[in-house]
Image 1 (cartoon, rainbow, N blue to C red):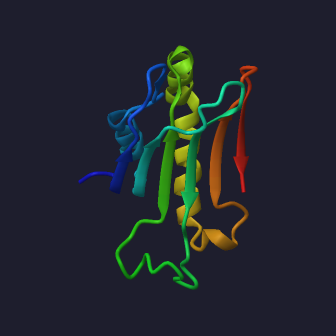
Image 2: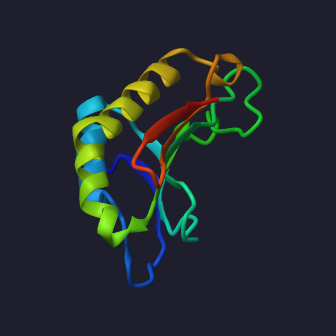
Length: 141
């Protein structure tokens, strides 16, 4: 069984690539026992000089109100978006995702869904941002 219900992948222009592929993501999800509603590999913002929003997890939990009717449909509560990066940064970012960031993101995901109604919890999204100055930051909101 795949670790997501739906999957989407943008075609990328030359000079851009995904820092992690479908198989790497699935292996990480299985290690953490995390299941997604959707996995999207997207182009992202490809303007020169802007920070790269590499990875985003979003918890669509509506357990109290069931606003999105996910539970009725048997839906999973998490979506993941992996954005493309310039090819010259892909190897560096791939290693960092493999060694640290993907694990951290999926730990957040498993803890978030275990809390129940994540919307009323302190955070319902986890975003990894790669700054062009080589710094990384994680935003939770």
